[in-house]
Image (cartoon, rainbow, N blue to C red):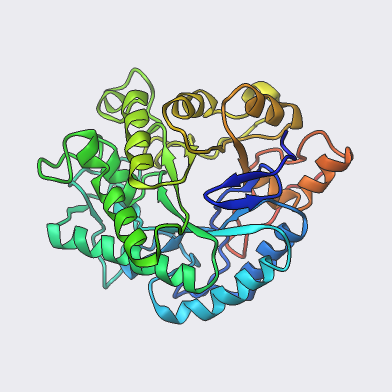
Length: 365
């Protein structure tokens, strides 16, 4: 089943494998994509990864959250991105650009000393207190995402993915823990999702109704279940309702993840050394899949072919998304397909997040 083709967002994919977005540390300091990124994505395409989702690209200069992160905030980036999509499209793979604003996790700079967020809620990880966004700034963010999507389409991307997870701006609005607003952009589930639905609406107006818009969304903030923060945060019923709202707005696929930096160690877990530890967001994805009629993509420590097949067969997801495994083995799909391997070699050590560019730095014996 994992090797069967599937149509997602009007895109015909050769299999159910997805390369989940990863910060590659391969852009220039101003966010301009480099040929190294193109080489990485082209290698994945050559090795038959069905859908490739790029590392997160920030839509406004003040929305950058890491060094050497790629951007999509100016038209001058269209040309280098075009070279990247042309390389991928030499093969059968599709490629989608992930778009993001760092929100309260954005990096402070002289020009942008205080990050912005829906509400002034101190980040327990960084100790930063963001400033509350004005209505005008919210509208500017909507326009920035829209323009970024148009650039992505011009550059030849097959679609875009809105990063609504991991404590960045869009997930800041969706979660009641980080969004305490009482206006049109806060309060109810519908209001907290409004920033995303307005972005979707505008992209469809400007880039075309059939241009694929995917979402990566948090199924949980990741706090300990018994903690006060968890009680204040998003719960699965709210997540399911949000997913339905996004589907109605025109989102055509949802990738399920979870965790914010403040919760610590939730998103990219280590020591995934048994099938039981794989797919740690699986119960969330199953609930979301029951709530919507669009494809659901599951990410989170998936390593074994048997687990992948089980997840698809038992209705946990429609596609399987991985990142670290493809860093370790870009040819993993071919190895699993040929029977050379039954699982990824990746040991989930997280040594691959290298400032000189993502690579597997584990010393196999």
